[in-house]
Amino acid sequence: MKRLHFNLITLACVTLFGCENPDGIADDAQTRDYSTIFTPLPSKTIYPSNNPYSETKERLGELLFWDPILSGDKDTSCASCHHPDFGWADGRILSIGSDGIGLGPQRYGFQVTSIHAPTIMNVAYTGIKNNESDSSFVSGGYFWDLRADTLEEQSLGPIKNPVEMLGYNNNEKEIMADIVERLRLIPEYVTLFEQAFGVTEAVSSENIVKAIATFERKITSPNTRFDRFLSGEQSIFTQQEIIGLNKFIDGGCARCHLGPMLSDNILHLGEAIIGTDIVRTPSLRNISYTAPYMHDGSRARLIDAIADYENRGDLDVTIGEDDFADIEAFLQTVNTDDFYKGIPTIVPSGLTVGGNIN
Ligand code: HEC
Ligand code: HEC
Image 1 (cartoon, helix red, strand yellow):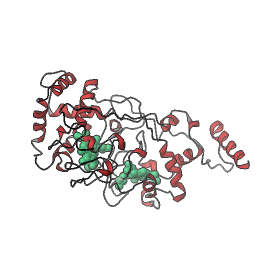
Image 2: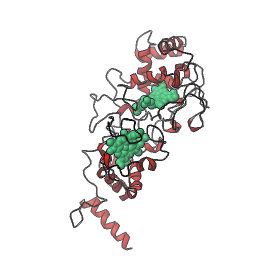
Image 3: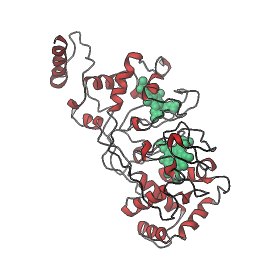
């Protein structure tokens, strides 16, 4: 009873007065002004002016994303490693590409990537800053080392990589011309490209990547409980979630994990989190759907990734074991199950949807 009484007082304190303890130190469970650190993710995708949205383009991109015709040996698709069942990642430590069979942790084969596959959820917003929501925003860069500036450019990476989609029977320099030739022989694709780009002979390397990027921009996860909290519905957070959020900020996490994506999307030179590799800060949106974690996929559970930050004064981070569960509770609020999970039933090439993933 005494405990309940205390909680009610704290709650009233938090929701009504935002008060401080008698000694003037902010209460742990106190909400504050977070708007300089985080703002909500825009709820509608921003498309770049050089690749505007159209419904047909998005649909075409979706079919290309799932069609193994884009791989050298016609056995692998983007969805082999970015699948809705695994939060649009693959649920694996490292990915298996061009000779692989199966999906997710069950997938087997010899062509293994050197780095863990991130999700493509919210890639439309990669690099976005607080309150940036108009057409002047340009997303990027991409990959763990930021080597691709745009989403359009990014998709050429896996297509030209022997481990991922190219295979070893094909040539990196010729593959795009080969794919264009393959697609031109399929009437459904010819029609879709013409409709999507409004010109005849629209099947081209440039338009392939534009369509894929347009589809990827569809897959977002805004309107989480965190976004609602930031938009003023502060009462939807539990005390533990507020405590976790405050620890996340005061513990130093938000130095790098800030903004609508909870990421500054920059490389932290001299501040490697795991091992010695220098990688960019990943987004923490919908993190519960994209295990395992870190660029080497070495952390199986979210709490393991959080625990990596204990005793990391070198990163100006001050969290201890007592903080892990609160921070995890807060990070769960940045999740939503409400993201696109569609899978086409057929692809225009007539090949197996998604490649050898069954
Ligand atoms: C064999 C598995 C595999 C396949 C197939 C694959 N990817 Fe990936 N994807 C990865 C891996 C691994 C990375 C990280 C590579 C890196 O950062 O160097 C990645 C990174 C990405 C990123 C960057 C995300 C970010 O946050 O920076 C995007 C976008 C992406 N892939 C889209 C695609 C598209 C589109 C296709 C099909 C054209 C595709 N992928 C095919 C494994 C795969
Ligand atoms: C100096 C910048 C920086 C700070 C400070 C920082 N992080 Fe990170 N965070 C990163 C980078 C960079 C990675 C990727 C590291 C890797 O893959 O090796 C990462 C990865 C993560 C991941 C895994 C994400 C994924 O999808 O794999 C989690 C979870 C995480 N950080 C949480 C936190 C928490 C909690 C704190 C505070 C205790 C924190 N970070 C502080 C930069 C930072």
